[in-house]
Length: 232
Length: 251
Image (cartoon, rainbow over all chains, first blue to last red; front, side):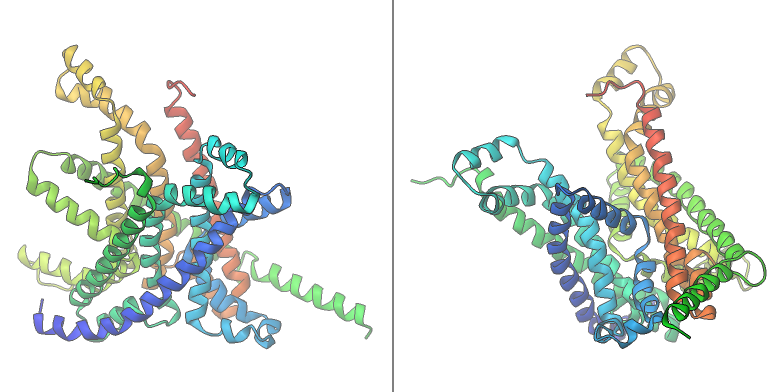
């Protein structure tokens, strides 16, 4: 291993870190909202709604993300009506295709986690909020959602780590994020170990930051479970 | 030509093309896709079995008294669970033959060694999956009630007998759901090995899509094959879980 090469590689890979962070943050934010929606639709009274969301989750969880990315980026271009529609601005860009695939993916996995959170809510909480005369949406906003999120947060932290790792697949459709640049360096300089060490430690650092953020949110959401501050 | 006639013709053409393209034989891609499915299965079965060995040894090491062993294994599971799979596959594919040649050099062999895409894919996935399985098995061992071990000791079982009769069956039962998840992720990770040129489902779909100019069709077929494999195996794991917990009272 050569340390001068290592130092040379660091700024190159760091330049791809921005795109990795964009991919992760955008798809996680949209994906979280979709996950909540999917989890709620799955509990819908209409059979066709809950059945179609179940099918969606089943298909997305049963196939590799790579094939989903390829299906969106290469597959949709097969159809002339998509190439001619205004949506083509989005589907011709590899970056947005990666975002769409990752969002769809995290929405499916996340919905299962949030569903677990929703199912863990004690029925007494619902009864109590009804006794206070809360309507459906108010009850969801004030009681059900915060409780479910707090329950689901540790598992959602794992999902975030998986998404950080999944962002590397965008490199296969020519998005130059950290893995793409590391792969380029490996192929050009034939120094796989150095490129791997630099890119790998950036990913580990990113995962560490993400888990810390989740821990902070968890801490803030569980204020009622902490011992009260001693007041003198 | 009237509009309905045109419509009918177009539909016939699309249908005909899809059937021709997926036919078996020299003109269609059907037999190639089946072979690719076997390759995907071969890679994931080999990797999963090797990872099971890593998982067992790793869990034993993580529960050992020696601090240094625990530290090394903690580093292993953190790195291999925190770094993207694709990066590890690239590292082993590009750097694997260098590492093997270095090791061979120590033993006095100085020729050129090349690792096949199959070997590098299997070793990458087994290293990644082994890290996950280590954690699964460790958790399962810790979940075996302490009283079981005490009881086995008190009836005079020696270490090996205790392991074989008490610890192993119960660990297996508790680890099975986690191992099922590991198998599914190993199966899906094999798609990433396609970047090294190994002809499995993903690679074959890519090749067929490129040569036939119908990417949507072939990626959908590929996704369907993966879905078939994951559905069958999750059904298998579910029945295995039912079988191993046949002696446990259900609530």
